[in-house]
Image 1 (cartoon, rainbow, N blue to C red):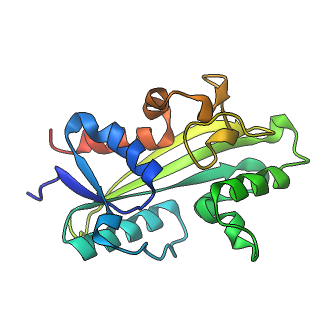
Image 2: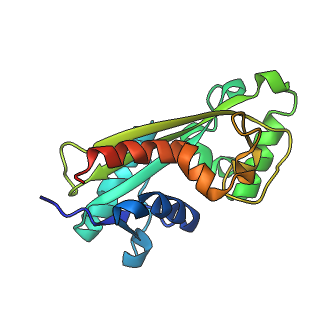
Length: 203
């Protein structure tokens, strides 16, 4: 059996690493960021979260010879026909001349929803987790999570990253960025996907 106590994380995002590691900690699974191996990010040319997660996991496994886990996640906004979707992390960067960072992404999202009423600002975070045991693994383990909410009119809170300051969580009546990380890690899209993953792994 392929050992799964140490798994390469196909990401160099420190905030994502911490969030994932905190959720996996009770199972004594160590996530090692691909940056420790000086691996460049994979080219995410898939057309879905599932495709991109598998692409990233295979890429990290190929360069390390280890099992690899990839998370491809993003925000779907109903009023924007599902945008930014798989382009969530580089939403603003899709337009030439714009910065490629969280602040620019959030600013563009607010601008595109400027004329949209609160009742029509429904949105959700989607997460797809892919785990491959080796680069050509014919049966990647794939788990998915969805977190429903809506987009606020301005940023609130300082926790989290990405679109968290704009994502309103109805169940807790606050922005995702206002949630205690321990709370977020029990209800988020990423948490949902990871809990499904853990249920599939050997105890």
